[in-house]
Length: 73
Ligand SMILES: [Zn+2]
Image (tube, rainbow, N blue to C red):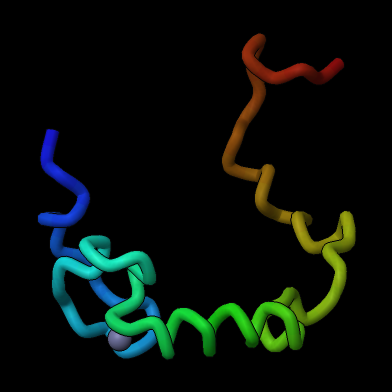
């Protein structure tokens, strides 16, 4: 298995590729970006636009077909 610090990953913020896990702020390319992203979560900029409702999944089960693998009457 590779050493994580040699792993080339993409910075979630600027999409730059590099061995960001070599630093403690990986996978971000800089500590600044890590803190910005963290701040966004705290400010709830990153979140679901609304709560999911049962109707959101309507139509998604049509392709399953029927069979003993389905827990249905
Ligand atoms: Zn970056």
